[in-house]
Structure formats: C-alpha cells, structure tokens
Length: 213
Image 1 (cartoon, helix red, strand yellow):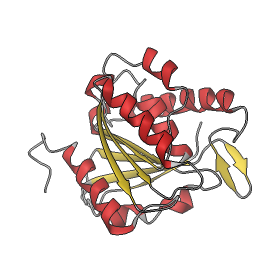
Image 2 (cartoon, rainbow, N blue to C red):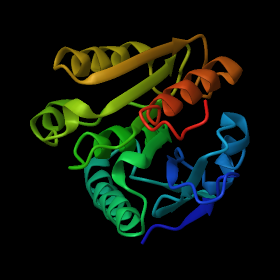
Image 3 (cartoon, rainbow, N blue to C red):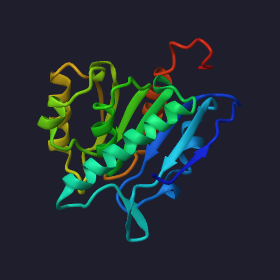
C-alpha cells in the first residue's frame, strides 16, 4: 500500500479530494504548500509517496531506462488507491488526480484508464508513456475525463516540443484536454500557473451548487 497523508479541508465534512503525486526524488514533503496555495477551503488533499526510495525521496518508476515495469506496478497501486478511496466515501467524481513530472505521467496513465469518471486530472511538466498503447486502452469513460496539462518552454528535463505533440495527439482523438504553456523550466510557474490549476480544479465541482466559488 502506498504511504499517504490526508490534509483535511478547512470546511468540515467535505468529501472533495485532490490526490497529488510528486516527481522523481521528491516526496509528500514537497507538496505541503499546495493546499494553502490553491486556497480551496472545501478541498481535502491526499499527498502520496511513490513506492521506490530514490536519493532521499521516492520514485514511481526507474528513470531514464526500463520505465515500463515500474509504471505498470505504480498504475496498479494507484488503481488500488482510488478504489480504496471510493470504498471510504470519496466518490470518484469528487476526486481530482494530479501530479508533477513522473507524477504527471502517472496521472495521465492512470486517469485515462481508470473506469470511473473523476472530477479532473492535472498533469504538470510531464509526458505520456507509450501513447499508442494508452489510446488503445482508454477506459469507457476516458472521453468524459477532464485533463489539464501544463508545460514549460524551457524545460531541460522533459523537452517542451515532444510533449506538446503528445497533447495534440490526445486532443485529436476527442479527449477533453486543456493545454497551458509557460515560460518556465522544470518547475511550477508561480501565481499564473497556480491560478490556472485552481480554476480548473474548481470547475470540476461547479455542477454541485453547494461549492462556494
């Protein structure tokens, strides 16, 4: 079972949840700032550690070589996590799944295969693994999933142009993808990107009139 930590929403009894997946070598500790930055008082946060130790942090899969075995194992672990959340009163359509870098890859990989519609998918500065296989294995609800993908023009870790091409390919299949690009490196681009993420996450819950906007 993946190690995780729940940061409760400021508004008690909320069952709205964002699950956040870190990047290579990072951990839960790298995203404790996120709840305050997004400033959505009705949103719980579940911060999750990847399964493999990596230089003081954790990794979702081996990188840069032999990615596939770790990705498949982490995919199943995240399916199990989402199933466990659903069994504990977090319905799928109230869960937003998000991640940075490796966590972005896992978000897209899992979110478009998971058989239940989520509130949204947020992929930051990552890429799509084996895109042709993913398109063959889309879940029955993949066309209903909302995906926000963001990337930086100056990303030296995961180059911008190939990722933009992958996102265009996803969009061409009719998937509901929102693409944002920023003059940034391999990081989160301050207030502008945070605002885009906040608005995307919030929009996933707007059909519920109880959400305070």
